[in-house]
Image (cartoon, rainbow, N blue to C red; front, side, top):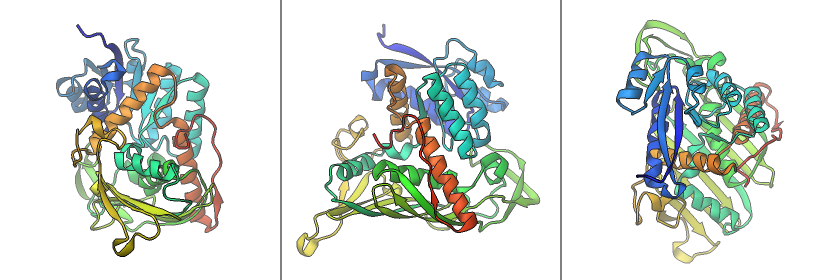
Length: 398
């Protein structure tokens, strides 16, 4: 008989990300046995019939609800995941706070900084630990890069380049979804992709203090779906088109509180790069560069004069980097995106068990939302904008 503690899990919204949350909880017992926890998939909530069927028959949930309020009212559920579209995040998160349920929510945490602030403050007032889906932090190469920076091995950090370029919406025939609606998504690629880049920059270097930016919309209309899909797939389209209401490109400059500066750029309509998410940090004694398309590698240059072969050296991830040892006993290329979410799930569970904030927090998401808001404001008036400080338990600076 297992001696592990059972925690009842509820997942709200079973698109691609909600299903990944479910798989991540299931991985905990094997990947993080020291937690002493067995995640029990008690219930899922989704208004779509097929999603509820899949929850029980494919993912192993004990039951499924059309109304998420029924899930939150279930006393057998100890914690919840919120993987719904942006415009539902505030409503569901505040309901989870009222129900006293710690929550793991995907970013952005709302459609604007005001919604993120209300969620973060409510969770903090209620004394709830939280988790937000800033999954790229958990890449072992990123953890090692952070160690190089924080230990001073790169010297004084002078500047950085952050480049989050994707092609998932590059076809003009991609359907017009809620992501193109200002009411339902807020801004476009800024909270969608660039918020990941801004969070990574803050996790590595420190708080972003001010920004200036420009945005553009390169694909201004898209076909309206005649059949809805899940996530980014399964849609059918007709001949009718509708307007794209938010940006699909952003370029920005950032100043960090510690004095470093950065160029940052993001697009979700680029043709060529599939998911080229690059973070490059320069210091007076060295530099490091990571690319998501080569997730398990890090390019490093230490020292200012290494002789005739001076320059970047490619290092492969190994057991000394972050949580790599849980997935591969030696150096290799075995880790992928899904593994990052299982690390995030473990940080969330550790936070729930200890009452301490180990996972990326609601305060972190609020901070990222304030960066987003400053970017959008700067793109509108062409000026530099300061990024307001936030309250609560941030972890990017821990």
